[in-house]
Length: 316
Image (tube, rainbow, N blue to C red; front, side, top):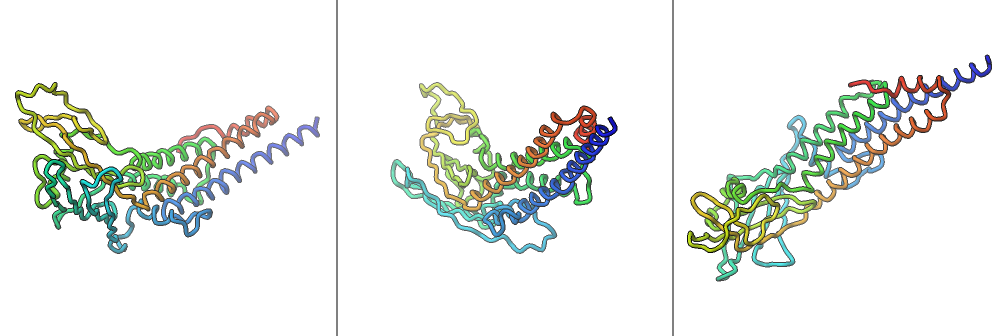
């Protein structure tokens, strides 16, 4: 009996030591790597990778010593139409210039419009993604190297919170907002151009995955004696010809839709950057969970209670 008790005590000691190592050394090593990737894209597994530029773009500025963000020009294009051509100038999270030419379908008249020099258009999707990344970094930095995790559930709770922020950041780039036509008409983007846009044009700009998209809607007024059944369109990322809406005292219908886009290379890297970070979080969750599942079932009943004291939930 004494021999059994001694063996049990030794096994308990091994279990406790292994779990302490997991909760401190292994967990903190992953947290450091996550912070490196989120802050500068230089995680141990990804040195000098394109993730560095992507992650820097989604990290909030620090002390204000950073230089001005460089301007990048992107040519708009579409394989389906040459009605719209132009160049968008991206500077950080803002469009600093848009130079657009539109060939009117009916008479081939060429319209040219560009941003006023004193205006920039903030891309809310990039701003929101950046804020979510900042929240993820804050959660990780709040658990310094000296912090001792006491339970497995505490690690899982932290990883869930970080993954939630990273998933929201990724979703802001992959899922553009659905807007109604009146919301697009009321947008400040319409008033960014010089000369002013004609009253029968609407413009929308958004990010979809790794592309920056520009949509131009041509409108015509529905006459009061129109036989068309007026049904206002709901929200959509991209409205189709025939969509109707009411603006002011007029009822309007979309007659033509022109969508052009340009690929932003660092947006593609950003999507990889979010995927890599989420995978690291999930791997740590799996490791903590697997350790618990592999140890508890084979343990002596008295050992289970010892392990449970480490595993049980304790709030931050």
